[in-house]
View 1 (cartoon, rainbow, N blue to C red):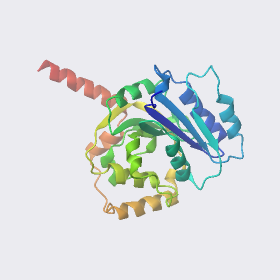
View 2: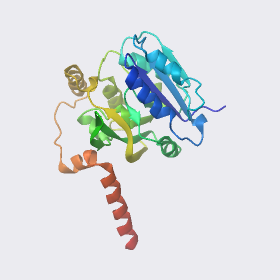
View 3: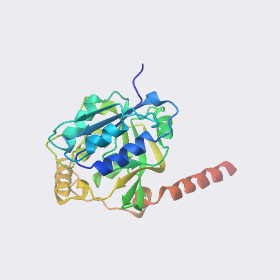
View 4: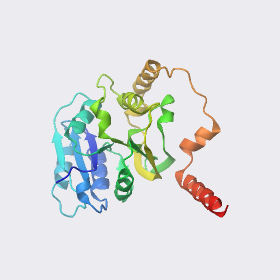
Length: 260
C-alpha cells in the first residue's frame, strides 16, 4: 500500500475534553480516499482520562476515519511530543492539529485536492475561537514571519523540511516560529492557499504567554528581525480581513477581467 498524502498529528497532555473534540473533528470528516489520511496521537502520559478517550475511538466502525497510531508516554515538552509524531509519520505532508483545536466540517477532501498540486506548503485560514465566538479569521503567509509565527494550525507543509530540521527542543513555547523562519522565510516556495476557514484555534494556549513572547523576541533577534516593520493597511487587510469577503472580492475581480 502506498504512503498517505497527509499525516495529521495531535499532541495532548491532560486535556481529555479538548482531545475528544479534536479527535471527533478528524474522524467525522468525509474523505473520498481514506488511505490518503494518517492520524497520529501523541499523549504525554496524561493522568486524566485522555487515554480512555483515545481508546473509545479505536476501531469504531461508525467513524468515517480511524486513528492510525497512538502512544502515551512521558515527554520533555510540546516539541519533544511533536518530534515524536513527525518521526512516526509516513505522509508526504504534515499538519499539527493540537489537542483542543478542531477542523471545520468536511475540509479534508479539499485539502487533499490542493496537496495533489504538490506545493511546498498549503496555507489555510484559521478561526480564532474564544469559547465558541469567532473573533477573527486569518491566513498568514511567510512574509508575516517578521512579526510572528505563521500559526501551525493553518500550516500544512511537506515532510521534506524535516529532513533538515526537527523542532528545536531547547525552546519550550516558540520552536514552531524558529522552524518556520529557518524553513520558509525568504525561500522560493510553491505555495497553495485555502481561504475558507479550515481550523478553529482555541485562544488561550501557551502561545500567548509572557514566556512565549520572550522566546519569540529572542528568535527575532537571532534572525535579525528586531527592528519592527511598519504594518500598512494593505498588510492588515491581507492578513486579518474575514476570508469570505476576500474570496468574494477575488471572484468579482475575475468576473470584471472576463468582461474586458
